[in-house]
Structures are given as structure tokens and as C-alpha cells.
Image (cartoon, protein in one colour):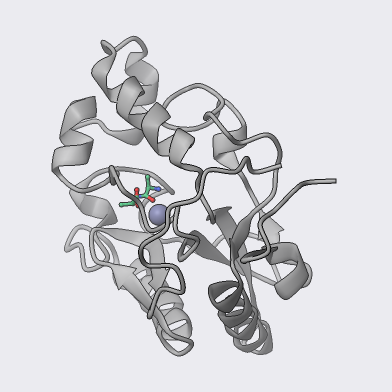
Length: 206
Ligand SMILES: C[C@@H](N)C(=O)N[C@H](C)C(=O)O
Ligand SMILES: [Zn+2]
């Protein structure tokens, strides 16, 4: 049984039947490695944001969509792992082409796509998308999760009207329950006010 601090709760508890796709607990992410601190497919957040996400899910379900979570709470050790990874030389051109074709690893921090002190570690942020209940498929957002490029900016001019509409639907649902979008990444939302603004956590996702 996972040992989770009392300030946190599993999103599976506050959001019944939520879909969790934890790429960081696999090698299928921008580092090409299992990210430090991710021990299984699970997602946690601080209690207030987790409950607010449950409210988002209720509205989404009533409109024919479920939420798919890519990441919730992120241990400090994972953020450190990202920084160590960025200092290492490029090794896999396929991964680079898939996740950050136009930037170097270090650029990703300088450009703001990856934070050195992340609201994910404070339990306030979530990376997510919408899934159509009828088809079981993700809505087309015009770029995939963790595609670090201008195209992933929420108001990117390089996407279709349909993709823009899908991003705006996610934004409307999230903003309706107290989350704010990070304009550089359509999938990243932080709950405001943060319940633990001065505390970064470091327990494993297990
Ligand atoms: C790495 C990406 N999924 C993300 O969450 N980026 C924001 C800026 C963060 O690292 O907090
Ligand atoms: Zn994020």
C-alpha cells in the first residue's frame, strides 16, 4: 500500500473512472527512461485541487467526455532527474524528433517548457486531455502531450479550428473549477490558490 502524505489524495479516489496514462512511469516519454520517483501508473494531487478536478470531471462527463491524466504530483527527485537529463548529450534522434524537434534539451528549461521548480511538485498542477466517451479516443489537440514546440502553445496559430475548439473546451472546463492554463502548453493546468505554495514534496508516485 502506497504511503502518501495526508495532504495528498489519489485522483482515482476523487475522480471515479478517470483515465491515467503515466508516461513518466514508462520509457515512453521525452527522456526515454523511467523517470525517477515514478514507481507505478498512478496520479496524486493535493486535496483541494484533486477535489476540484472531480468537479471538472462531473461536468465533462455530462457533456460526453472523460479526463485523461498524463501527470499530477511530480516528486522533486523527478524534476532533478529532468535537469540531469538535460545536461547529458543528445543520444536518440527519434525521441528528439518526437518531443522537441526545434530545441536543445537545455533550451526546454530556458524556454519554460520544463520548470526547475514545478507546481506539479507542490501538488497543484495537472497535465491532461479530454477523451470522447463515444469513441474512447483523445480529442485532437493539434499536438501530443509533451511536444515542446510553438504548436503546443494554447493559442498557437499553427492548428486547425477544430483543434482550437478542443483546446478551448478543455480550458473552459478547467477554468470553471479554479484551474489556470499555462499558455505555453495546452495540457498544463495549475489550481489557484495553491494549497501548499511554499512546499515542494518528494515522495514516490507508487
Ligand atoms: C514537462 C511538462 N509536462 C510540464 O509539466 N511543464 C511545466 C512547465 C512544469 O514542468 O511544471
Ligand atoms: Zn505540467
